Amino acid sequence: MQLSNIAHGPEIRDEAVAFCLWAPLHQRVTLKIEKRGQWQMKRLADGWHRVEIPGARPGDLYTFILPNGLEVPDPASRFQPNDVHGPSEIIDPTFAWRTEPWNGRPWEEMVIYEMHLGAFTEAGTFLAAIEKLEHLRRLGITAIQLMPLSDFPGRYGWGYDGVLSYAPDSSYGRPEDLRSLVDAAHGCGISVFLDVVYNHFGPDGNYLPHYAPIFSDTHKTPWGRGLNFDGAGSRFVRDFIIENAIYWIREFRMDGLRLDAVHAIRDDSHPHILCELAERVREAVSERPIHLIAENEDNNADLLARDAQGRARQFTAQWNDDIHHVLHIAATGETFGYYRDYAGDGAKIGRALAEGFVFQGEHMPYRGKTRGRPSTGLPPTAFVSFIQNHDQIGNRAMGDRMNASHPIEAIKAIAAIYLLAPQIPMLFMGEEWGSTDPFPFFCDLADELNETIRAGRKEELSRLPGFDVNDALDPICESTFRQAKLQWRGAIHNEPFVEYYRLLLSLRRKWIVPCLADARGHSAKYDSDGRLVCVTWKMGRSILHLMANLSGEAVDTTVPNRKDIILSQGDIAPDRLGPWAVLWSLAQE
Image (cartoon, rainbow, N blue to C red; front, side, top):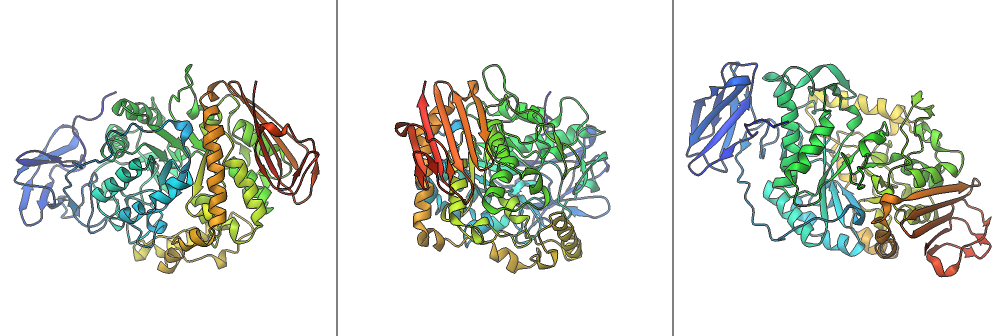
């Protein structure tokens, strides 16, 4: 299936710039270039409007004027210097890349570090983030995952209410600054993933409905009408999204994408937009490995299917909330809301580690219906595991982390589990020094939306008993955003904790990563007596074994041969594991 012959966004030529806009709801559209003039665009077939302007050049600011006088930015704008309601800027896509060549990294080597650009450093810019890359390299990080960058309204936000999918938000810097960050990361051997949102547009600054059938008449999402992937005019919408994915990977050299909430992407046509996107992205960038990660609350294992050679057909992996939930309960004892369905015994921890999903088609009381599909046949690298991320911290009334109120021994124990398990680990910024800096939800939308956002936030928190919604931080206040700023002095004050994470990741690099090359033929089994969790993975000729006591009391057990032990964390004797003790061993057949 071919993409549209008309590329989205301005096309820069030697002596002119060509502009195009898909506006099938109007017969006439005018292009306005500041300080240059206005031009009537020619209406082409299928609702396209096009004009070529000699003398236009990068740096020019432009808008499209609809027949009712409304001026709108380019939906494929490459940069919005004055935010989402202002004019678009023509951007020269050429860049003097210094890391040549960059061939990417194989998936099994990934240790991901999720960051919010605005809160990662005090300055909150692309260029400021470059200064911290050496810290990440020394830690053992091999990939960073940037929370959404597509231009969103206001001075700060999580990025999931973006409205201009091709424009990096100006609060972080210019597009060339983002390219510099990617280039610098590659120079450190660090891959770069971008979080993208293809299930909805934000409520402030999306002008597409004024001139195009961008929304579906039949599909809904938790955030409003779904995108039109299968109705009249859907070819444009599909092309717009697919080209956006290719754009980030090709023009910014991203190593892959994390697709937000794919369970909310509804499409009754064939092929499904997710299948077409995965196929087209890999066709467009075949010279290096491209990794696609899904967030999928439905735990649909079909999206993670492998071919006969063990290669991902669509998505490389998905975020595995199940692993987070079982380890979170073990460390904190919290069993409210959806956590209740993951509590009870260590068997659920074992299943999450050995098989991926805890719920593989069973009834989930919190949802009131079945959840998930069988995942036992998937390799462990089909799952991204974590004990912190933006959602699991931010969707708490105060945005507090586990470290703020729970024993450090428990935190270190679950870190020793997920950082050495065969799944792909992901840290959240500051986790490596035990940061207690909160990461609450924050946004800066138009005034008329403020009360709607506040009410929606309280309703969301009310679904999680254990939080007093009246204590929740105001998501609109700038002080809430300021609280989320990572305090880097913690990396110095808590150097022993950083060194602990560095040790775990060095052990992973030495012992675990070589095993993962054989993960296609893996098998796993687990056992638990309630407190003691035992998991065994067989990957090729390697046998990896975990024993963990995730309780505050000692457990009698038989410890395996000492010569095979690669990590001994906590009080461990030949016949006993002390509280919060973790033992990893690796043997060869």
